[in-house]
Amino acid sequence: MADHSTPVLILGAGINGAALARELLLNQVPVVLVDHSDFASGTTSWSTRLIHGGLRYLEHGETSLVYESLAERERFLANSPEHVSPLELMIPVKSQFAGLVSSASGFFNLPFFQSGSPSRGSWAIRSGLTMYDWLAGSQRLGSHRRLASAEWKPIGFDPSFMDVFSYFDGQIEFPELYTANLIHDCEQIAAESGLRFTLRTYRKPILHGKYFEFENLLDRDSPTDPIQPAALVNASGPAGDETLTALGIASERLFGGTRGSHLISHKPVLLETLGKRGIYAEAYDGRPVFILPWNGGALIGTTDLRHDGDPELAIASEEEIDYLLRCVNSVLPEVGLAREDITQHYSGVRPLPFVPAESTASIPRGHWLHEHDGTPWPCFTIVGGKLTTCRSLAQHSAKIILEKLNRSVIANSQSRKTYEGDVPNISPGTRASFIMHSLTGVDIAAGTQAMAAAAIDKLHAKTMADIIERRLMLVFDPTLSLSHLDQVAEALIAAGKLSAEAKSETIASYTQRLQSRFGKQVLPA
Image 1: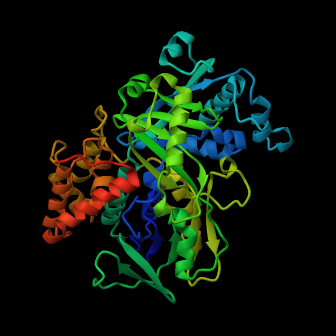
Image 2 (image 1 turned 45 degrees about the vertical axis):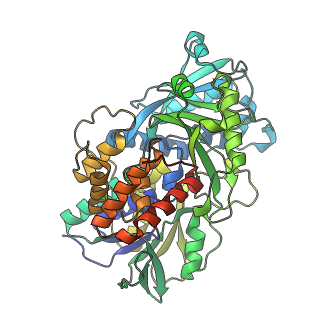
Image 3 (image 1 turned 180 degrees about the horizontal axis):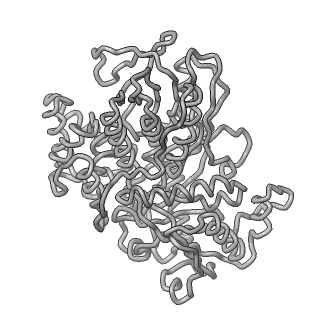
């Protein structure tokens, strides 16, 4: 029988908060999911867009995380093929034996034997990939291989590379739309089970004793409806400490996020060099760099710098852009990537645990549910987490929450699919339209205004940024023009989300946002 009891309140509608909401609803627990902005507007939108086991985590002894991630990679490929596809990655190496002892000492936590040199040679890479394959078990992607020189030398790697290995991981083109899919699934589960599921975006939670009110940040005159939750989950990512402080919930510092910046390029010679394969290589300074085919362009990342400011103000600095350009050219010198070849950039903050003195590379990449004491209801904060493990994090967290509510686990999402049937071949640049069609029923060939209307009507879009950046994914279209913005504005006006008088100002303001946050130029209409 459906349970209509008091809901669990989740603050943060990123991929982890949405996955947890689905897991609780599957276990017949009602949920209110709240975000101060749009869903998936934080860390979820700013990643390298990989569903991977975390090959480099092996070097820090995080074997259990790699095992968990590889299992989740398999589930993503099986359950969400419209979102995630296999991606072959090439690893070029510069020597035979470099890093072998250092990698082993990291794996076995023997810092005395670790080397200051970050370089990894063929034996270290081969050992890591063999362990990776073993942890993956019998999966659909197959095992790593060493490429013949005739296969990799024409690619144009720097002459310092002497060997190349190949393996597969997964790529999620738009985690923003996967989050939309999770919320759509929450609505379906709630409707089928007679449960309450409420999504409130652009709401600021205000705590009054045991009760929460939610200030509407888009419509200040809109009344709030207070609730007393059965439990509170802080899933606000790298802003988790600030969320707790704003609510007056005492806690030790939990987060010490690092900033990761990315570049996007459509330079033809780079796209031809990559083809359908990505590169995971040591750059000139020994740090790893990804150069990936993505959405008809190339995605390059990432940096890993400590970030102590507001996560929403994270922007790729000129120093980071120059660094990533130099990284690419140290791997593929014949490409000659320059500043003018960069279509746009983006940057975000990882929700990593606070570690005062460690190097950023060695900060643990796992996740856990931190319980707070002294609150009028069970209260938790999600620490860590990444795209790949959102589902397993949700399953683990739901079990702990259910125990606190004196309830048993009755279901999980391990085999729950986000799409039924065979997924057609999705060519670069068409995935967003296909997913929009599957979620809303809008014609896959519909124009921008019709697509925007569907996003507003079916997928909770309220602003121009919601539509451009997290529904239609036009933010990554190199042909984005003022005509697109005009059509989105018309859809917002028709839905009562924007006044006709504010149209010109809204387009001008959003054009400035694209320039400052993404380094992106909007083409004339």
